[in-house]
Amino acid sequence: MLDIVMLQVELGKVIEGVIRKKEEWELIGSRTYSWKGSQVLRCKRWDKVAVRWHLSTCTTDRECSGGSNVDLAETPQKFSELPVWRNAFTYAQLPTEKESFLRLGLNGYDRRKVFVKAFSPLKIDVDWQWIVGRDGCNNFTVRMSAMSTINEKSRAKLGEFCRLFDMDGFVDCDNL
Image (cartoon, rainbow, N blue to C red; front, side, top):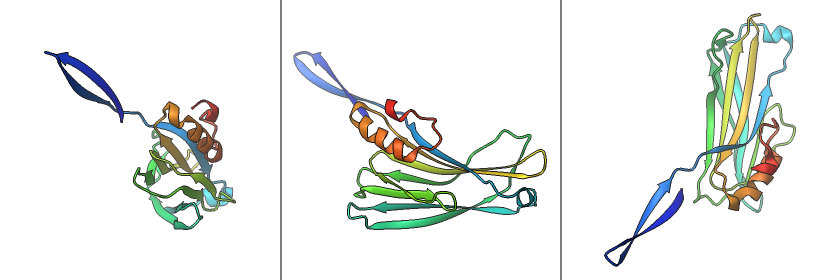
């Protein structure tokens, strides 16, 4: 929250009032993965899709806790519907947490997990989208996106995080 202090003089007394302005979450990086399986597999009927990702919180000694997580995607959309991203998982770094780093990646897509410095506020979402195309074939996509609030003091660490995390190029990491 951004605190704006207003001073008001009333009969010789200084009265202090605080107005809290809600800060906006801004995208600081995203990684989108489309399933690139064979046409034969893509065009078979699917009942469910397992979405797997890895997220660990780590100390400065690189001792990590957490690991792989999974969500089951069910009920694909039809090609004629407006595409919707569905949330599988949300991670939020709270100001009280002591973890210094995050290790994350999408199982089966990232050869190496990304190791980034954690800070607060930070929110990472894992979302999926499943659309059966006009041809009857499955199109499955997973997206990891990171968001934070941007202010002058945090620009350097946000830029560093963005350069390590972002793969899609939607964000100009040098101009956060």
